[in-house]
Length: 103
Image 1: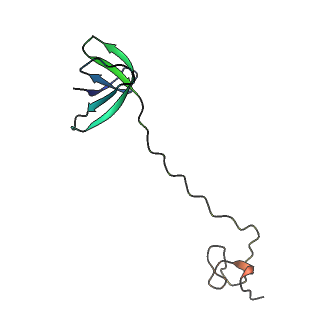
Image 2 (image 1 turned 90 degrees about the vertical axis):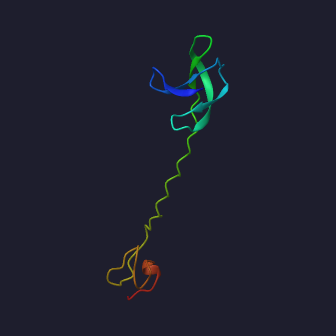
Image 3 (image 1 turned 180 degrees about the vertical axis):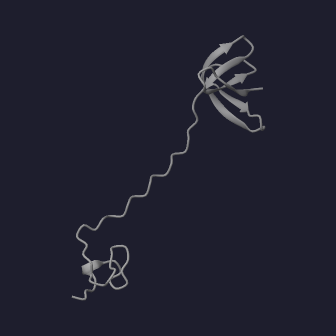
């Protein structure tokens, strides 16, 4: 039976019940019974019947890129309606002087 084991450097490796070579894919069982395939990176210790091995890191999902901020309106001017601003205006719908104007 192959299980996960904490290595001296603090990373997780595997303890195998048979001799394996680097590059071998091994099925490893967790305490909860789930199994996963792990690729052996290097054999750290062996007694001829069992091995303690480091494993290749598994690929983690790439986080989604943050959304870009909306473009700034550097030439925006209020339309003249009280409380007009670039995000919301009851009269010009945020278009500023390009929309309607009271002047």
